[in-house]
Length: 147
Length: 163
View (cartoon, helix red, strand yellow):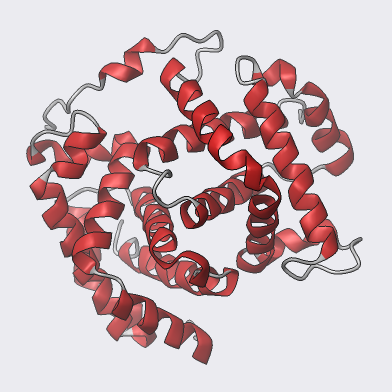
């Protein structure tokens, strides 16, 4: 059972209340597809992913980026029960989408970098630690139902 | 079962001698261009990246038990951050052959420092985070991928002499 300090709780709530899901989500997903191109394997039906500009301008990628942020929002609102919050989503990613769970960490790293760029100096080491701890919990919960 | 995904033309222009995942001509140009923009802030970058690493990945503090203090921004941290970034800058200048260029540094890390190579990845991540914070406009996805590849290649060259 994970323990959150008051600082970590308030930091996560603060970050997610400040970032625009429709901006950060698409930017993080697009960055992931550019920086780790093998992740494009899951988006074969999304149309043109030929180069970085195509990826950034792709409306289906953009929409999915926003969807991902709303998925994260569930954990933000249920920080004390992230594991159970993601049971169904974990099954979905495993049984239906067949996503290698290593990819979750890659997306998490891109999200960290996008949020860092947004928050600038306010993304201190302590804030980064809290954010990465939160994302690590999400990544772990999403991988839990794989077998 | 899976549709053939879009083939990326730039991956096929790689010219390398090692055959491993390697830096394309475009990567090298991107790295040099970005480095010329940011190297003036090397000291701040190194200090922030190292400080961040010690806070976010506390296990890395085990390598610095000989320092008087480990607080972010303290003198030993700032000094060492500069040392690390000088090494990165040196690697940029030797980008055509990192293995040969970093041989002495590899021996240092292998036989004297004996830093577990997993930590290179950790420090690289924090350097990238600092790039994003300090240069949000310049650190685009394209620059990010080239810098990530470069730091990974640097780490590989540093680990060359380990065993």
